[in-house]
Length: 576
Image 1: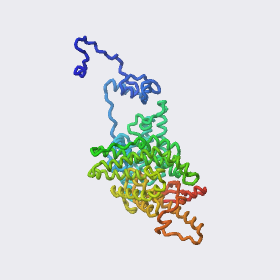
Image 2: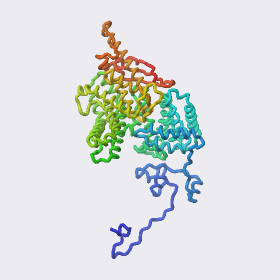
Image 3: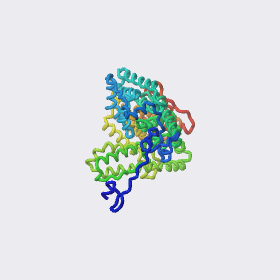
Image 4: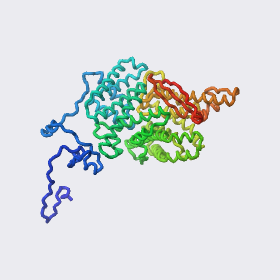
């Protein structure tokens, strides 16, 4: 064995054999980068080399080398590292960049994009003028937005100058098409955040998100055409030759695009938009999730890793169920409009089989953590566990059937308690993160994910009693951004829906009872104040169109009764 380890395979009594020598090949510097990295001879086929295609690899093509490049190789000159453009002579830019590093990027970093905001973007922006100015503008506008009147602050004008400087750099760039593409897509993501933080949702969604998604699809199409083969899942995630991971950028832009489409159509996103989300981790991570094997001997860092994976799974499951609701909008409408309830219910339950599997796996994880982790250590994961429980409770609202209780009547009886638990968990998390602020408080809180916004919106919209719904709205009114959305926008939307539902209900009662009808007091216990309105009077669709005025939108609402009768929507203007 020692002779083998030493590289000598001769055995006693045998004549030493001459060692085989590799045939000499001239060192080639013109092949594709994949073959050069693998140190094999590239056949330099066009448009992709056969070496890569035959092994299922992605061939990145061939560089056009200048005479200077060949001269550098022959002289053994190492190319210089990218020049750092950190403008030490401009302390204001450095200050805003520092604010971005210390405050903005951690505030924006969620489960799926922490690496992009906290590592990759800060590193790449100091070598790229367009991204540098965009990042500085984002840091400055984030710092300024803590005031009720940010436009009057000097930092606001500075942020505007940096924003314009970034756009100017993009226009004047002479980089290759592909390099220019990923830079512009990344800049579009930053511009979207800048506009959203300012409440300029029309510019954020209609301008920057639209442009970024269009360019991203063009780049993916060019990538597919270049290789003359379908893009794999990995190719969708990471376009070749980009110095930055494109997945978080893609996740953010496509997520915002889906929201924009959903708001504009009242919950019916375009099919090609929904199809594109299938390649995003934020919508598909849940498909591969399985509960871990947690034991009392499991070290703390492993429990932490298990919790992080579970939080990713529950966030993507919630997004996936929202996407599922849009994909099956017609069947859901037929179910609640009363035309053949049983067939549509059975169809929808069947379509949710994969989602229920993931829901059960998350349920196992929660139970294992509570049962196996020592109480002293469990206290350290209290917030993560609460976030996981909140996410799972929110996903439960989308399920057509209770995985533990098939009786629909029992499930319906449990719903008020479920909404109450959701609100309790939201309040606990907001207090722990110090995100509960008075609506009149000038300081704005920022959370990277939609921690409580979606759960509170669902509770406010469908929480059963008026008291439960009002409690949810009060928490939404607290000034903060969650996932770059102001929660007060949802509060104003829900209140507009309440007004419309109350109007329609009172019109119906007045028509039925005539002069005998007496409108109940808002806080009165009974048929109206305690159990809420019947389903037919609830808003089932709300189209939102953002105006050019900051924090203003026009809402067109349709209730189930109006949808069934074919009545036109009611219109309201909301402010937040």
